[in-house]
Length: 329
Image (cartoon, rainbow, N blue to C red; front, side, top):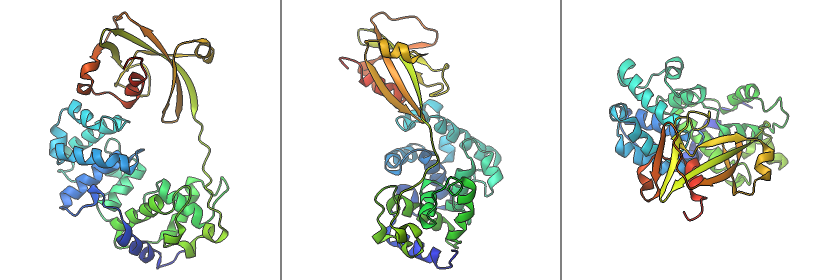
């Protein structure tokens, strides 16, 4: 189904319908590289609408690679606060340092060197090559996968495998506007070929789409299993102060500030009469038992958080969610 006019159809749609995103604005080559790097890190596992204000604030405070490389890590994390997956912020700073030290301040133009940078893997390296360097790559994100599944009406497990989808990607052909083209395809997935209720009347690919012809728009996804785990969060409070710790115990939220926690079994969770909350974190459904104690306990590495001064702390959303569930907050 490889057609030479597919890029023209998609780019014509994009030129008339693309979103006005801050990292797309016309600027110098250096700025475009930097904006692409920052936005791609932020967009890993985070939606565009969430990223926009964070991106604008981040590039205001760290306007280029040199500023970012020389910034205090705590300052970078504070500007990332609320986006989650804080390892991305740390890796972004490390990447800025490495680009300046080893690549003369310019983003590498080949996959292997890009993948040598902290936090950059298969997908992000291809996104950077396409968007920042106008190379003929189409990064395979969920939007691109969804378009291919509908165009080819892919339903079976073997059909929706990563290997098969990569083969089917040749459907898109190539364009000399590689930067725009990669973004255009992802844009169609985000705005038109949505997971539910796709806007087929506005899609440039309906004549090529088997799902449209069959009126079957359901999407088959590979099975993802969310783990259910049980924890107790121990809330030590004295007047307006709460005890928190730097997490060295769990793989999630590593090195970030959390309430002292233990993993418990399902039976203990069920039998307790204490307040219970649920928080979804990545592929884990966390069932959390809230244990309150009015005595501040001494814990190595612990710190006292004054709730009247909470905005001065770098807190992951996870900790804020627990904090907001406490009585009298």
